[in-house]
Image 1 (cartoon, rainbow, N blue to C red):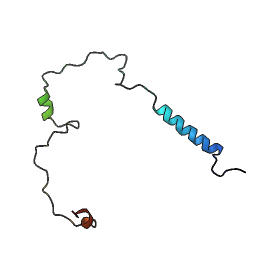
Image 2 (cartoon, rainbow, N blue to C red):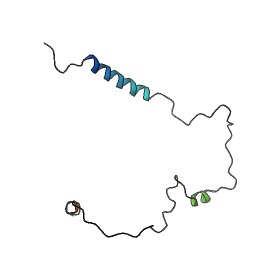
Image 3 (cartoon, rainbow, N blue to C red):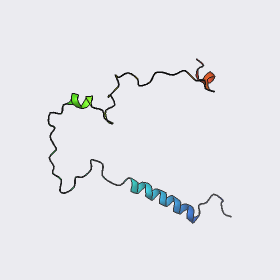
Image 4 (cartoon, rainbow, N blue to C red):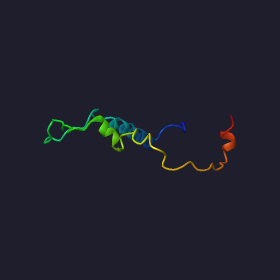
Length: 90
């Protein structure tokens, strides 16, 4: 008598392939990227670039830029939504 829940060869193959992918996905070193062999190890020096000057410039990596500016558009009228009675019940 055989069980209907036993794994076949293809089932075991899928499990082994998934486990192998997870194990190989974790391989590698944690840390910064390696420099090319021709690159120098000295960091470029900033020429008069201060922290306040950098904060005043727009940047993708500067979340505080424009936070004190006025909103670009005025607030519109509220449109009714089907879930309003449920969401607004206090």
